[in-house]
Structure formats: structure tokens, C-alpha cells
Image (spheres, rainbow, N blue to C red):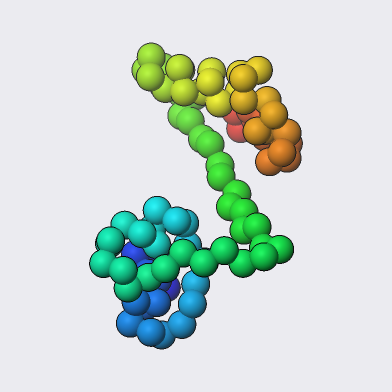
Length: 90
């Protein structure tokens, strides 16, 4: 299925079970889908950050980038693996 909402709807219709974020599972608030913790399972998602270095960044973009790679978030990056800013592609 193409997106989390479609998956949530399929589960609500009784088609099966799925792993989606807790936000998606509970967003409808209709009680048709329940969040169930599965012992020993810790799903993870890989996130990528990208920016267009050929244009000047806005202040908001710079603030986000600075925060994402700050000392404050170093522990999070360490747990995620080697998340480091990449050099622009040549």
C-alpha cells in the first residue's frame, strides 16, 4: 500500500495487521484501530535529510540544520548510526 493512511484503513476494515506510527494508528480516533506493543520488537525508520546547497538557506532552514547536527542531538545521532552532514555532490 502506498501510504500510512491507506494501511490504517485496511487494518480498520479487518484485512490484516500492520506496523505504522502511533500517530497514524490513533489519528482517526474512531477506536477501530488499536496500538499493540509487541515484546522484543522495536521497529526503526531511516530518515534522510537533504538540502539544496545551490541556494542560500532561510534562517529557519539554517536553524534546523544547526540543531540537527548540534552537540545537543549527538546522542540521538549516535544511536541512529553515522548520521553526519554530507558534502555536496560534485
